[in-house]
Image (cartoon, rainbow, N blue to C red; front, side, top):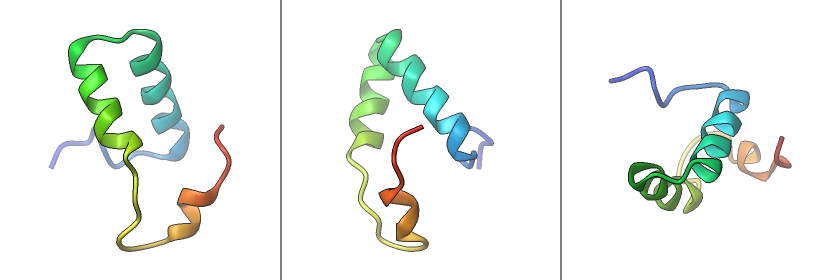
Length: 52
């Protein structure tokens, strides 16, 4: 497993900011994947927190 994905919320906010502000083909693909977020296991309250 790579260290890219298990990150604190603050790092994820920065990932999303970069993907939106610098829309390269891979960034657009990743936004489609990660913005389609649905909880299936774990702490669902994390998904209900307001954006940073």
